[in-house]
Length: 416
Image (tube, rainbow, N blue to C red; front, side, top):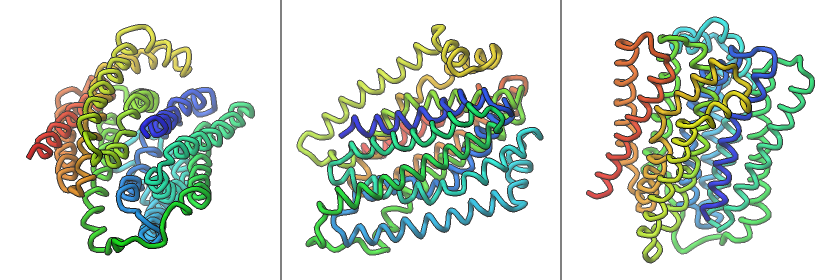
């Protein structure tokens, strides 16, 4: 069950480094890459945050066609409302308030970010529908189709990026944002097709247990929805912090490639959540899952240490990603501040999965609130006391300290 989901997250993690490799070779250069990393991606993900946990919700709650239909309506309504928010930000003066007044990006980054946000309009609704249907596929034992959908997404993205590099005159932000949009639309269509052909015939028309009421669903899902929302809101705050420290444009440009690489190694942990939700109730399930989690955490953080401590990091960012020597050096050094991220991602998703399986979602929200508070405090201390330090170092260090605190809270609440 885990391997296809891990492969799916891994392939999604390839997307950001792939975008960095392509966009450094297109007109626009660092400002366009910084726009993607500091504005387009963080704000788009922030807007869609309330529907990210639809994957876990549908994995846990969809038992038959009646419960599927009820949650499907919620997915579409939520996708439509959040898309309206995205349009409001991308096509109105609200964008200038967010990008210029709040995040305070450099002037060269503002207009590329606006174009990128506009091209990312289909992002939220597509992801709402995709994650809902993927949870049903996992529930029906077809996690392999989730991984296949990610391949569809990457193929669409690679096609757009390849055409952009071949043409050579299109701006990096246009090609990058349009490629991401085409990818998520393709993956959503695939998930819907797979449900109709594979999962729907496996779901009974009705079960002996009635579908959850809206009140029951709200008490289960609202704490889950706040989890990614609060986590993701920190990314624009991190972009703001980098804008007020040394070398803001270079830090934001490096962020796209560095965070994308770290995401690759964290993907093993992200894939673990739905596996734990599905298997925690099996005989001896939690003990087996815990042993797997320990091994997975050791392997993933060790791989990041290998990249940070050897020339492999410079090779990745320089020769492969196409960064200049200074930017590649900055990116390689930044990996040291993220060493614990892959390990605590595994631990977090293990404990979150156990809690979701038991329909105890409130501790998850408590932990992520703690993450937000600790991260904001660390970023504030960095901006006030380390103004000459590259912002990416402070941002990654703050995220790591906050992530460790979040993990420890989950451990404590699970024990209680």
